[in-house]
Image (cartoon, rainbow, N blue to C red; front, side, top):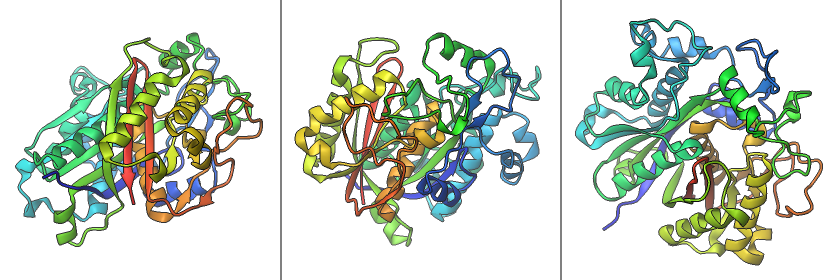
Length: 403
């Protein structure tokens, strides 16, 4: 018998705030976290903006991570460890009362952020800072968890994959608790110049807060974001027995590979549509059950067009009745962390009956005609929702969540 899986703890560190509630307040207010880059000199970059985590993060991380350990971590890893500790505290879980061998950590990690802007890298810590498995390892060390801990790298779908694997482990009885999520930052000159060379990034630098405009006619690429999102997943009965707060239930998922192109999605959103369809099938829900879709919604020409087409392929006429919004309009694209961050936002939308908007939706693309929840949050009682993540290399993920 398959076990039910719930979310009992969550945390967010993004450009919109250093706590779950601060982020939620700003998301619902339609606030943008995108500003001019301050991490380094942008004079040689065509893109000069990003959604940077507030400077107060440094003090926050010092309150959660011991000095010696912090010196062996990059800023990205410290974001993930800090978010994990806040999510565990939010869950109220006490690992002393659990079998630590049945507690695991799975993190989406594209890179550790040990780039040209990373501070304090020395010969003594460069190996630790560069290890892509370091984030889940540090979290496991913090709580002496002896179940599997590992990192997943599937580009922009990485932390959505981590969530799916964590769900699978609990559902099939391999674990009772899994800490899942991701952390990322590619706000550095080498990666910005690389994405500029691919014509993937927005160069609408002024004003920064209007640059990310998913589904709009004048969208010109994504805006890089940074941050971390972490969830604590638990077997439902165990969580209920200890009186835990249940944010939402993970109902199912689909992970697919397009096998098509290293950068571009399959034409007309065929791969995306297949992923969404398989996720609904896996979760045992119908197209009529879905009340909200948190889109991948990158603000690029192809993603927004093909994701819209995919939703229409799966939902037919029902597609026009489903609110679809992009958190990236406010947070930018947090790459490996985006799947977890957006799943957390989806869980809050389910729990609180509020759908965050797609901001900067001023000039609609006539070919993209779904309900993108333009500019203002909307109250709606949602019972089932989807969170989409689609990455370079054809890595696709759709997570199904229930109230």
